[in-house]
Amino acid sequence: MKNIISLLIILLAGSFVFSQEEEVNGMESIPVDPNTGLITFQEVVEETGTQKELFNRAGEWLHHYFKQPVYVTQVRDAASGVIKGKHQFELIYEEKDGTIKRAGLIKYYFKIECKDQRYRYTIDNFVLTRQSKYPCERWLNTAHRDYNEQWPQYLKQLRVYAIDDFAASLKEYMVPEVIVEEEEW
Image 1 (cartoon, one colour):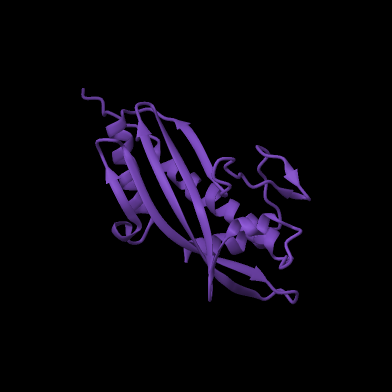
Image 2: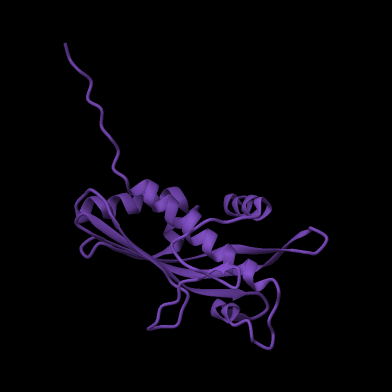
């Protein structure tokens, strides 16, 4: 529910700002892995801590971010510092009269890899599920015979979810807590 409210607020606000990637056709570009051809959000983040400490923080974040992290995660390997999982979020669209409707569920995979002093997250394999399933990469093709004017909005929602919600929450949680020692006197 938190994710839906965040998306609605952002959609109604009207503008999204990320200047790391160039805009294409008036819309921010979506990262596509050249090897797989899949929409892939990935970043290496430098952070204080050993592999074990970062892995433990990522595990705590799972419990903070997901309602049922046990069902979301498929791999939690402390030895290699890898967490893999599968999750979904709701996609919405706005009718011409301003009515907000449900467009379907977006299923995706994520992976968090921890090493000393850094971690990497990867979010990919986005698939829209309704009556049938199809990969979200279809939305990148404006010349597709089934092109829908909602597709750019759907891509923005993917980007907002991946960067503003998932990644921002993870980054915030991965920062080590500052321990303030009380002065004894």
